[in-house]
Picture 1 (tube, helix red, strand yellow):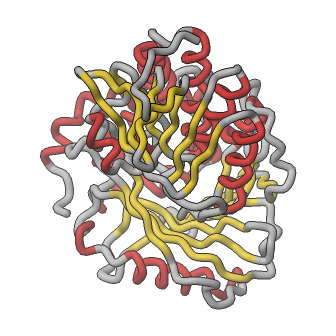
Picture 2: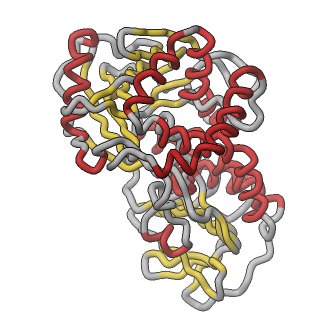
Picture 3: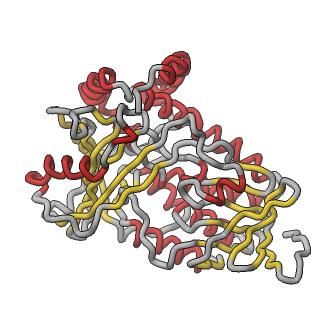
Length: 414
């Protein structure tokens, strides 16, 4: 690849990745395997944990297969058990021509470390414990500053998760007019740790009895524990006053007996779920995964989008570095935008308790509705989805688009 000449203290690479989560590691694996000189900066230490639900959808498994990642060590998941009020439906993941009929639970401290190790084995230079900040010259990102050095590259990949300083430098911040989510999780011992279904309780309430647009989850890890957590959208009434620890305790009290839960193994940890991005590309850079706001507002899931967007960014870079940022923005837009836009609009709708409650009954009320809900919760829908689920989501995008201004004006008070 053609490179420019840097200053004496410059380090010249082809591709620089900021962040070594699933998205960043996927980008590094593809680029390094394709012969590019890649450096990845991860401000955490090797083996660091990442607060997450740990669930991998069938879509994520397909993305790992595309990367030739061995996921046999993860705990296999065959479906989803959805609970809404007194209604419970247990559904198997469908097998399609794009995605397999199983997912997994793979705790992030082990999952991320495995991907980082594969990236290193592929030839990427991983630098741990170093925060990298994009370097912009004449409106173009030309590299990063990290560890007291300037590292230059033809393209920088922003994969630092929820938007922070690096995103601010590039203008890739969250859109303040769009929703976001908060979630909290813990691990607890349970004799049901080897179950093959995820469990999602869609009918949550806070300590005041207010319906919460979000869900509580039980993700069996197959290692003696279950990942238990709750998440909520910023569109709910009283969101700013929502106590996540209290919400988690309430949910734990509901499932403690049926799951025979022990005490939490560690202190519950919370995190923010970005669901939008003002800019996800520019001259010399792209944003991928959570940094690009690729999180499904209807389930808080984004690992699969991270793997796919990281893979795509590097594939386009290897094909043509100069055009990669613009082509990337177009192609991820074609793939993800309509579904994620529908999800954001839907989050304003269910922010109203009087809409949320009957909506949940509809979501699992019939087999057909439950199948569509399963596809939504599994990130199995996008612009290429055929059949009823695809038609429903395209119709929902059109209808919600028409009423979106009203939904935003009448949103529940935070």
